[in-house]
Amino acid sequence: MEYISFILICIGILFNFFGCIGLMRLPDVYNRLQSATKCVTLGTCSILLGVLFHYGFVEAGVKAIIAIPLLFFGATVAAHALVKGAYIFGVKLGDKSVKDDYKDVPKS
Image 1 (tube, helix red, strand yellow):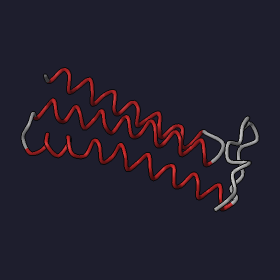
Image 2 (cartoon, rainbow, N blue to C red):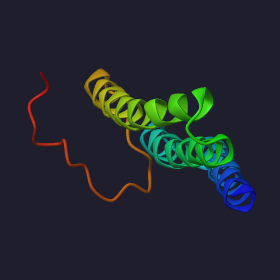
Image 3 (cartoon, helix red, strand yellow):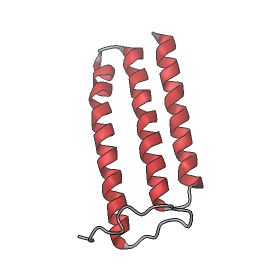
Image 4 (cartoon, rainbow, N blue to C red):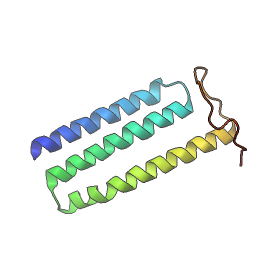
């Protein structure tokens, strides 16, 4: 079990690292939020699964089980709200953006 938890934690650290690189390298706020939401959520959930496999169903493992769905749903809903708010506020898409899905939707 220690090997599984070590592998899951390493995968989680890698995903978090890639999410941080995406935050620094991507061109606009929409791409940065996508990178942060997908990579960091997946990485943190992987780390929490590693904690569950390492400790088992004791206090730390139960907290990890509870934190995974809270983080998953909370981060995705928060990122969607931030993107929608940035779009309504008038933050422009990047120069290389191909499609604007909200272009024809009334701002309300």
